[in-house]
Length: 336
Image (tube, rainbow, N blue to C red; front, top):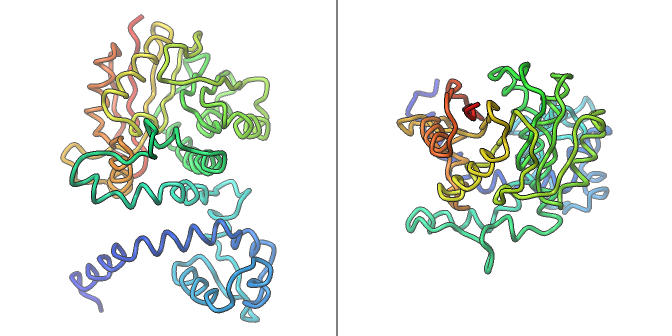
């Protein structure tokens, strides 16, 4: 039996291999490997031909994905999706999270700058841009939107276990992207209507998701920026899902000031994103994503620090959820 120290050695190996693991999974997603196998098991030769993949290298990719529990073999030895791959990595699955891998594929150039960011504190940005989001082309916007929607599908369910939305009328989802959180909340609470605010580039995807959810009459999309004091008015509930951690404190203060201005008196702001323990001891996912945020100029904060920023903006009655393994929650009220 492997002792604790020996097990730790293999965890260190996994950390050292992280870039290879992530790139291999991202390649499989972009190649459509899991989508193809969901239609039926197949041979190495046929999979190579159908997806245009190298016959020499494909066995190595299949071996890796099988070792991770993502591929299986059927009774005839053909390659097939595992139950986990079918649930989480096939487009159209209600539990699909493959978009997260596509999201990070847009960040590889930035992630290579992690050592420099850790040493100097200076974020990476595309040349001539204020931030990396300004440098996104159409394909990067689509990857980012798919990734954020994948996060929101699962995060929305967790959020509703923490926050009671029953006493509100109208939701403003600021930086709501494709509307994953907004659709989840409105489907659970039929008395609510809402507005998604984000850049024009995600309008088509957002409206498509809204229509798929059957919410066309209750959820609208408005093009706009949370850096401008022009957010739509008339909402008593405002959501910031994985927004503040993209930005440093000065930008976060600007965002919160504009949100405070837009929200109706007595309304509630809900902040949900990866948050760190007060002593910076974890959890795992927020600590890893916190490194990515540091490279991009943002930071994963503690719940206490989020409360401080909300109170600086004028909000009161700050409430904190328990520290959660993915996204924690902080809420506050605009004085009536």
